Image 1: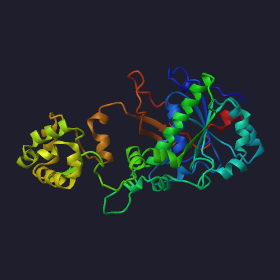
Image 2: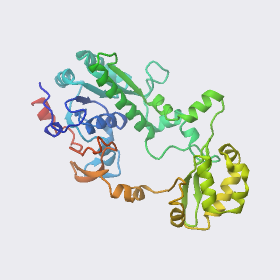
Image 3: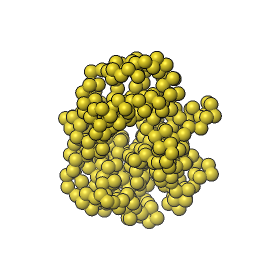
Length: 385
């Protein structure tokens, strides 16, 4: 068996052109990792079981026969079906592993044993192997199934998300899976670079739990250094004020006043005697300590005008602010609508608009060369059946 590059991946000039990635992963974190490699020019083949990636059925919404969830993270790869429990299919996959530069997989520990995944790894010791796992191997929950929601719950992320007097809240997008997928991509790229330099590092784990905990950043370090357990603050920041929403006459506006100089400019723009007279609010530490009183006064002021009126007034002030958009509003804003972040993607259900990679390479954003494929659409081509 050979692995000729997809013609769409030849002559791209992209940094990963010529790199062959075999993707056994399902759902989100692993497929996102492989998709980013594909965005950057790698030639990716996705191997699905005869039942298919379960995310294909996570709908509504659908576009054609596939869920839009599947379409979101499965572009830039050809698709084959193989049952690793079948000796013939397993032998076919072995040949792909021999030719691969990198493998991405998220098999559960019991599947690693029953499907012969360790034997696959031994076939090509030079291959960079990226395992997306529930938690770091050897730990007490490493063998348990894991999902984005469970990782958000276990990681402490939900513990700092939501209203102070309400219930813990998950992030409205699958942040745990996304962060883990990004760490998986870092591992894949590090392995490829390290291999070219003769460095160690062939098997990488990107564990869902620890990757999600890494996203806590300042909240985690604050606890680890002081022992103070962070609490839910709604949309407020534990260390900066004002850094959150204010209520306007017709909605909301976000203020992100990160420095004392920015706060001084805000006070000038608002021209409010109460704010001007509170010299104790001149420093960030005092504003954080007096956040409740400060927020109450800011809301009183901002209620006097509409969101757009305040945006017009703040536009040239040097005070960081932003409107709060819903998803439709985010895609309608000029930066996105007037740019090249959105492109056309061909899918089994027809053409649809999709987000291109956010990365720019020498000022150019790589295009979408190939959209997601139907289940097993390239099996005959790849396996020569």
